[in-house]
Image (tube, rainbow, N blue to C red; front, side, top):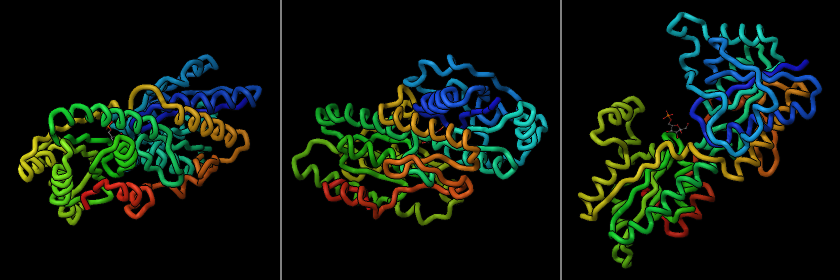
Length: 357
Ligand code: F6P
């Protein structure tokens, strides 16, 4: 009998269920006797011993369903060695649950923080396989995370919808896209939606250059300008601040978010009316797109293969068109940023998109 535990951890995304289905279908297909246990709400389920035995039918009809059938929560890595409010030692409790259930392996669907914890559990002796989840696409060691393309579709649709109203009213529109630390969704949705200005955390902006781009469009007879702005977009002067100082500045900001601050600065500088749209968590919701369904199915199948061949301590990942693997220890604690010198940024600039730099 093969016993496998599975959990989804951190912010959700569209193709979590599709990935779990890929894991389960492969295990049921390739192993005669297998039991899959789902932990409720991520690592919390392991800590508090909250799980359920899943059946083949649990994985039926979920390929196209967003969210996670197991629920999720955040268990920050930095607090892993702090006890729970009830005084439970988290790592010890997770090891005990794993042992008590007699698991042969644990599959973790998670982003950066969750995979760091997965690596810790692997170091503690558990047989762990990781799958790269997040709309942000910032997991080191994989070309793509599942969830990313689905969220790009939603953010792009938001920009598409803004286009007609922006043109009717001769306004500047800012669409604030998810991504506090990295700007992958903003970059892709900005290009796909035809944004005129794209502001990313990785490329600090100069508000004067942003306003210049707006003025240039006005002079060229364009009635509107659309900005795709990442949640974590940062000005050149703020980028010079120490991390702590910047955090304090953000905390004391009189605006709900950076997009509103930029909008205000644009109005003051150019006199053009500006509006902000925040699609927010819609970017994590709804059905996975076809690309993500395929990627998730492949990653899930590959994760199951790792369990069958007892090849643990790895994350399955996409490299080019192939599914490969990478040690969890190699990716733990690293983020995959947009390279300001990358081809995609260069080509976007070639078409006239301003990055405000
Ligand atoms: O996990 C990715 C992410 O979607 C970020 O892009 C976003 O800023 C953040 O999570 C918001 O998450 P929550 O509101 O769930 O804390």
